[in-house]
Length: 79
Image 1 (tube, rainbow, N blue to C red):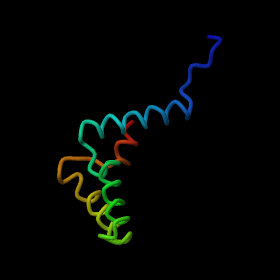
Image 2: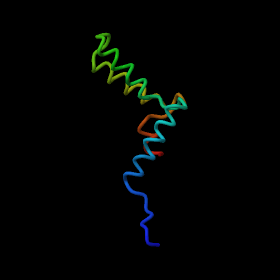
Image 3: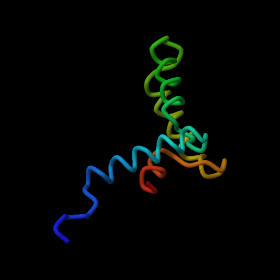
């Protein structure tokens, strides 16, 4: 075996990123990029403060498992 066939950290990160995107497209991520963007949009419009958005995101992440979903972090670790 002349070639080193081990998986590099770069390859692992690409696989994890792909897994997160796949999970988001399947709708199983509670704190998806779409949800995060919606929260930040509310902050930019002045509807809520940054602290309120952070609190809401933490609440979403906390209740993800109870709602049969997972967080981006959990999907990353699975990938």
